[in-house]
Length: 382
Image (cartoon, rainbow, N blue to C red; front, side):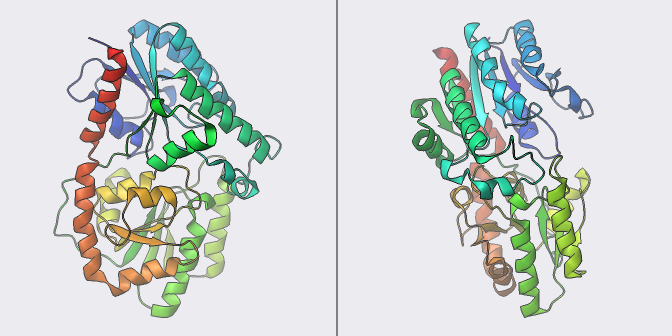
């Protein structure tokens, strides 16, 4: 029996890595989950979980040695530029693919984000405050993305992305081999939810509090909406800062403070056992974005709770969810219109939530796992 390794992070709670690992290893004894040594606090609910790698340049040798020890035939990597530590560890990642290839070990890489070339500009850089402009500028980023996308495509057996839009960028912007790219949607947890839930009077944002998420647009749109309706609705922002982007968090926090409003609440990170309550009792979930470079984890999470979403009108999200059937798309300067839609059409919102269950069934994690296993099988067949 062929042995397969999945290299992924498992935190934070409700993460892509955990749900994929759980679904892929279900009913299988030949799949090993490799995660970071830093995640030893994670409750071990996975059968073949191993804490393998450090978030520094040693990760290449640590993963390679564990792959040899376990005699794996295929390794599936999740890739984000800072997943293995920092920008340097992200740059050297393709060399791990080369080393494994020389040992005749098959590799699959999931690229969670793909940046269109015309988005690599000063406006993009400004969304990541606190980064050194000597290292983190549009010229170095362009070189970085060209190198990463082309080498990963060249040295892996298959590349997985979550939307056709991201695949088109790889093919048209970076001249990647289309035959080696597979589209597998972001999975959604199919939850057995209580249908007798009392809806509260708040809109929910759940995720990191950073400018690149488009939170300023949501906040200003909510203020504009409240000026028109003057009701008791609240906006709850559940989340905190990303390491290295604390300035962005403080900027948003200060903006809310200056508004002097008690109906915009920064709740911080919420406990795992509280997440379901926050989602299911909300009027709607807001899923903003400024740039279209990745499938949305928060969107998948909201859909898993069968919640109507108000989402930014950008390419990836328009592929993942149908406007005025499963949610409400808004331009980033007009977020007030999304809040107003929920206010004016509560019955239509209920219809949206019925339609969302069909989407959940299509993208159930067990179905997503089968898509991954089919890719593994086709590679191993040769």
